[in-house]
Image (tube, rainbow, N blue to C red):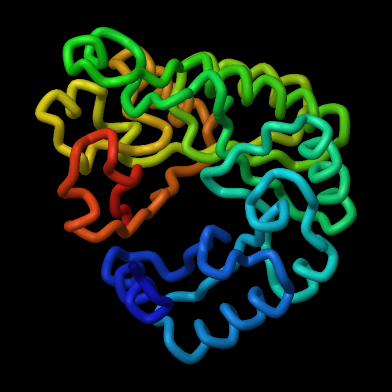
Length: 258
């Protein structure tokens, strides 16, 4: 969908001089050789500096941890299973524990897959009007609460990607006040769009986590203004037009951000 040259060109055109690339590539960035390959190719081909985020578990499967020390030595700046949640709390605990040895953050897509089910839009009035399966705010809130507790237990640096709910912001606020090493980011689309944008079935508005209702958007803006949320990050997902020109439930989640 995008290579290091085209992605780097898009980044620079949008004003970004450095980007962190996630591990959900083919092959998955779960081996030091892949991390080094990305860095070597990027130095030759990309107009922007590429900083690889390596997989937290092999194949992004949520089971077996990657070799964090080797990946860190190869140039990984953080660890994440990207859009795949690590559902096993025991695995997540070990990932966080080992991350403290390499002094790198663990970036999470905080979402309970079982609560999400087949949901593609925010669970609420808009989902009901559209007749589309809903993804409840609770799916994010429960996982943020779990991971914050694990970060507190392990002393690791947890980074919550694309926060989208009011309760998650409050959980992060309380955790930071208690001294837990947790940081967070929000996307431009979650700051500026509500689930009402999906009313026309425009598949470019299908994102993960989904666009939420007005109350959540306002909470995200307050969280950013009060520095509970540390940064705005693109969550850039360069899906081709033809991939999005399908039924809403079949479209891949994500939109371009660079």
